[in-house]
Image (cartoon, rainbow, N blue to C red):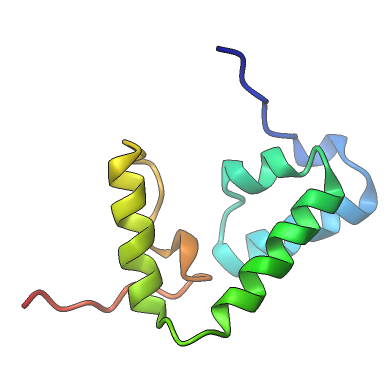
Length: 96
């Protein structure tokens, strides 16, 4: 199966580099998803806009973290930091 290799920030134009820099400032890293979407800057901007709009909904940061972790576990993704989907805010969940 072929894969799309994430972009290297030093090999992108200034607008994409600025977008990835903003992602890194927000998340403290550039997840491979964003670096891969950067091959198509319109798609990256659209994804970030959608993510921003969804973050304004009624789902809390903790709930988004739980969903992201559950999906990651189902897809066998174990390399994402807990704050990757919470815009740098860690999940403050309590076990019940």
